[in-house]
Length: 285
Image 1 (cartoon, rainbow, N blue to C red):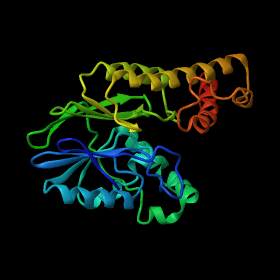
Image 2 (cartoon, rainbow, N blue to C red; image 1 turned 90 degrees about the horizontal axis):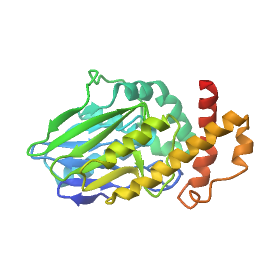
Image 3 (cartoon, rainbow, N blue to C red; image 1 turned 120 degrees about the horizontal axis):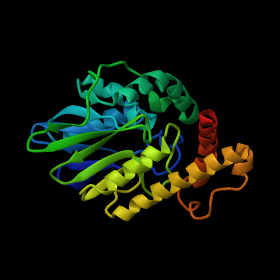
């Protein structure tokens, strides 16, 4: 585990920009932490108890501030399944109400699937734990000690309730999976139209750096264009196919559009997500 200090007191571990496999143990998303004079706030817990344990040990090596807060940007397992380790050290877990429900509803099933795909050893002691988020209302701010953090909620975007974290000192924003960079965006629980609107809002923020859920940190706002193009086009293709009465197989036979095909995991993501979106749009009709 290698954390990069991208700004004074802000550290990021960049996940493997690849599919989950036995070598990476599902550590494919970005996690980070922000150090204040009194407290540390962690952004996402990683995919396992083991991952979270290593993260906590690293934090303790670089600061004496207490790890008081953990923000879970959304319930997807690469971001949330390390929660149980943080609960052991009495860290307050901040997660949207909808995503807490999804974490508890789908967690055990997803954990079994993960073990089957990449091996049990990565997930030793990993468990899905109930906890109370006191029906947290958003937005709100936290003072870590000479460091103010804003936490905002985006309902029904990439997930049922995506959280972003903004450090007011550095103007660095952690965007979670509302933002992808150099990797195909995933859409298993997405509302595309809302997501597009949220990307426009994030683009208008005064940020110095935007940390995506996957991929390198973003410094230029035009780097958001790829996420927009991908989700716009997959939305159009899936909805148009449903209107024309096409089957998923007929759509997938056409392949990934050329202008999207060069990004990492394009084919795998397209082939998985087009049928999901088509089923969703069929149910809307």
